[in-house]
Image (cartoon, rainbow, N blue to C red; front, top):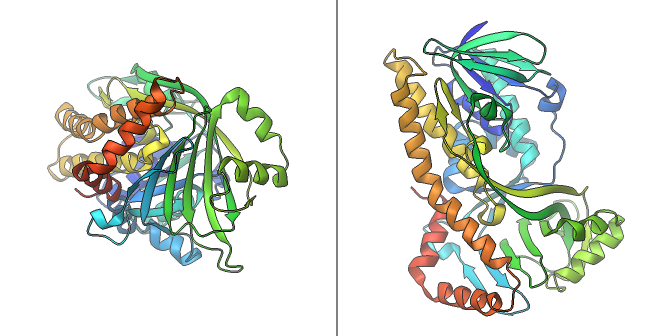
Length: 404
């Protein structure tokens, strides 16, 4: 079968790209190795997504946030302020929403809710326009491209072609690799575990990033209070060297909550784990190219961020917007979707938007996970200097808020 656009991966990036281009007169196929039921009803994976204001507006335009709010009005939690702490020091650098024109820096919402709502929006587009084909339970096994088309062979043996093939299938994208694009990877040698908790003291909708002096980093992402019980809730992200993480994953629910309470120094009182725990390796990935002949990558396949700045999903959604804009303009002008000029513009724009913060994040993560004695005072000095430099904090705040 021949399509105008073939997308490998039915995660949020792939689904949002298909939804963005639906109704323009293009034929679109989305290939996903997971079964249809797993895409339609994604399991809770522990991850809370920090949406910038711009990303939230984009998801509203696509109808995704309205679906989430209709199902659960408490699902979107405001992220008003953020603080960065270093080791046992009581000092913290606070990045407040007052540095922006908004009453919050952004919003927090569970990843599985975004995935489900994006799937529902694509189903709605199929019903209205009939221009998206979902091929579930199959994956891209082989890719070849030439001046005429991109051709894929799926694991099932089925073959398809398209003007353009787009990879949206994770930071370790097998489709990107099949096209021959390598990537620079930085393995931080750590594992992060995510879990939802209830805690005694209010968080006032402030996010925490706490770099310890014992190999650990802790983040707290504020959620809305439980609408039924009124209990204070948050998502906790604990990062440790893998060998230190394994015993924690084996703890029962009560013991794990007690361990989080201890590690957070009871700053929010007692913590109680209320969800399953999910562990992820900490690896940053930046491809050497974002495009090739009749090929482009988006989402995590384009930039796999360290989570410390919470920009991974926002960059993924930005890649969707940038590529959709190029493809929409090409189609409106009756040009080939796989034309090198449009792909080169997409690559240039997305690299300019992501590369500086990707590299800065990598350097910050390396400094604040360095527990050597010389590094400890430097970490504290950098934090105190940054706190006094208002333009620096303003730049971070506006970046978090997604101002453009």
